[in-house]
Length: 148
Image (cartoon, rainbow, N blue to C red):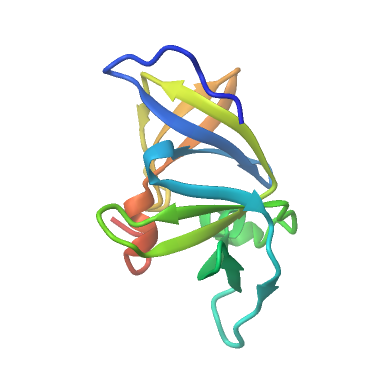
């Protein structure tokens, strides 16, 4: 993935991804690995956003459909080309986010507050090349329900 050259103190680096029609920015510091989508084994009775368990770099990882997580009314995106594995800040827990595409690392200096109807997984918003991008809060992926 391409990485931006300069980095300033007031800016943060994010992995820009797309899941369905949604574009999201994931903090690079929380990203453990980005891989081609692994084989996922469904878990009977689990929430529809949970695709199942996969083995990534020899470890079991719960894989969640990012699109279904951010827009539950629309359901799963059906496009799971990559898995972005997040690590829990200050811990060893991980979760995989199924996404359609990763564009590379971007730097975000300015961002808007989250919208009133945004789920807890979204920390704020920004615009990249004229498109709205949801900035994800990785800590919320490790909290039951992801609400604030």
